[in-house]
Length: 143
Length: 158
Image (cartoon, rainbow over all chains, first blue to last red; front, side):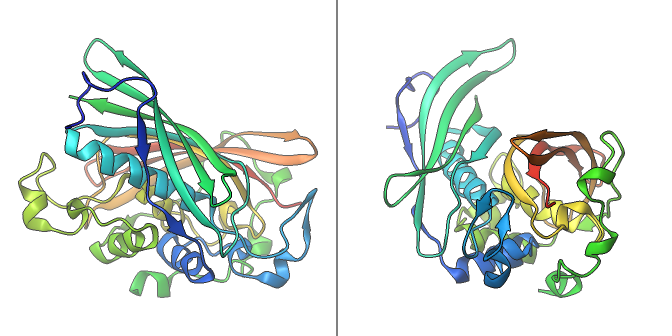
């Protein structure tokens, strides 16, 4: 069934892509984003402590989560003629090489304004154990 | 990639030139650089997150859509944040931890756009002994149109 503003309802789910995180995928994200922070490159540096936090090894860029969520939202919105207008995210848990992550979305509500129609979506990213690694909210504008 | 080669990938270099949390003045504009967004850079970003939509790759397809030509994915601002800031910008300080971001999208960036950034720290605070800075950012195309605007929360290295 084609997604339309009319037939969407709270609780409807959006499945995002599964993504295998590896040292190579993190390095590729460094090259693609130009974010070469040693958090993502240097295991020796990451053996240290960061205030109260101890990572123990390199971690994936938090914005890799953001990019996957955004990909899920646009791939869902484009066929409906809708536009991805906003995404807010918070990182809950660091992601290390060897982990597989997957974003999902759940329709929270719909709202009409003077000139448009909006769908609000709760988003989260889970690892293969079902742990939340990122949460957020998205807003999509419908025709 | 030519742009990646020209970009200083050693974030330790110039680290002593970057502002620490104590030096950052909320409200003070950050230095920024114009950046020409190439199709190669878009393709590399797409590869890194598995984007395959033809709007980003297939000119013939993109031409008959509402967009009238190729566009970049909305999240291309992830690349633009680093490509539009100089090597001494505090966003590159090793140990900067990203705690979350929010972005609003107006119009898409396109291949060959010349992108400019207006950016500043908006706020700084201490929470649970961690040093936070909130930064806000607006990206424009060469026509002065807003592409997207966003805010981020970072934990600064001590």
